[in-house]
Length: 380
Image 1 (cartoon, rainbow, N blue to C red):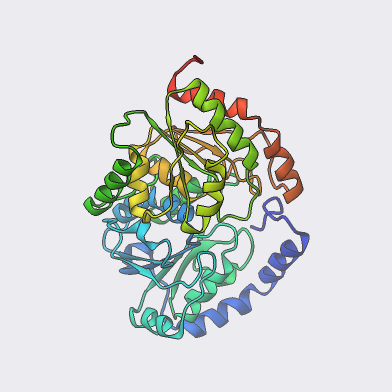
Image 2 (spheres, one colour):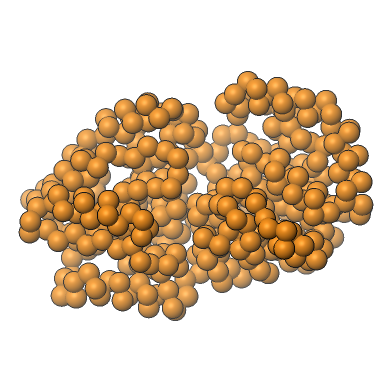
């Protein structure tokens, strides 16, 4: 059933209603394109998992992949990912293969060659797991000739779905996929929402080498900071970070490390240069994704934007302070693991100006207080 509440624009709500009026035509078109009959989940043998491919989106789904494989043990699951983020799924025992063929983290853009390879795998099922903008996944599954298509219908396009997945809105994003799996497996799934990462010995060695380079003789606990994000959301002001680092140096005996992508190096080094002269704040931008996960496991605390590193810290169980993405529902983007703390005041579905104002209202002293709380420390 179409629900108005999750829609942010009236135009999209109207389009969803139109797709329901056209559902019989959409269903017949899909049947002609796929040909094969629809079957029950227990008969599925080869399934393609589709969804957004940002690091967080991939890790949200790892929370329930074990339950998915347990519920449908005869089915092999393949995950369509993007080259830049597919490594985060490496070694997952519940996946038959990870296919790093999507040319974008947020769009299912495939080359003609990879479209042919996907067709040659002859999937009988597509798990369309995006809970926000799911129609591109359904369309891709139809173009690939996949007869079984599990997906949501609360925003329309039910004519393209053969196995409708109910949704309880709002929930943390990771909980949506847990419910998705429960609907397919025909049983309750109660596993925790902590993401699963399978860190290789090579990644552990990479992280260990990076830690040694920080300062071999230094035994202070490490606090890892991520000041940037690829997500389209505003950031906590850079001058606030510079103030916080000075306060940290005066109140806690910790080692501050700034992490990011190679493109962030100049910006991060500029922030590091604004700290006290006796504080050496290293910048680390050369780690692979598995290496970064192993690095975060060695840290005592992570402070991050609501982006990939947040979910990686959750996966390895490192205490975490994060600035929530207020573009989304407060519940959806909120806390879903016991090791994390949300630094952001209440607010959701905010435009850029209101995001900036809300983040600017968070004082460095308040973040310092939460860092001290995470360490169980008192000011000196």
